Amino acid sequence: MNRAWAFSCILALSAILGGCGKDGSQNATQEPGASASQAPGQREQAASDTPAASGAQQRSAPAAVTKAQLPGEAAETLRLIKAGGPFPFGEDGVLFRNSAVLLPQHPRGYYHAYTVRTPGSADRGQRRIVCGGPRKQTSDCYYTDDYYVSFKRITE
Image (cartoon, rainbow, N blue to C red; front, side, top):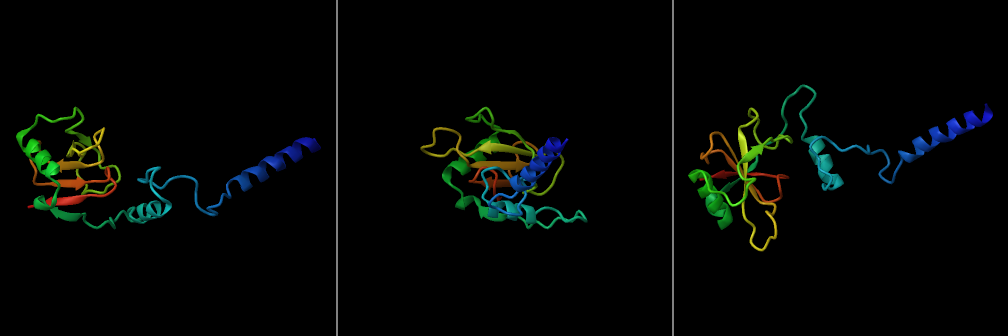
């Protein structure tokens, strides 16, 4: 009986000490919307951007970028979106769920994502344009060059 009690105490102490890593009081679980590749400061920012308990949104609108300020490859992607394709990648036009709520909220199916080619990249790269509304419409589009971490609203 004493061995079982001692073993239970050791397990409990292990669990307590195991939770005290070098980050101290930080939880081991990720904040909602944070990705594993984000630095701790970014996770804290993501946490501060979550809706308040009352449900009110505290996010600010994405920054803006004009079409003229976009890379040439983004202008080509916008042209393809207006034309309805053909798109260079099979994944272009897929549903963008806006899970992290970085864009204005709309019903599921509103946003679609398109690749913006990255010269010299062996894969699709990190640049995308996400457009909302009916297909072929580019009046509610956003540009990201960091694979959906941040967005800029595309303006005229």
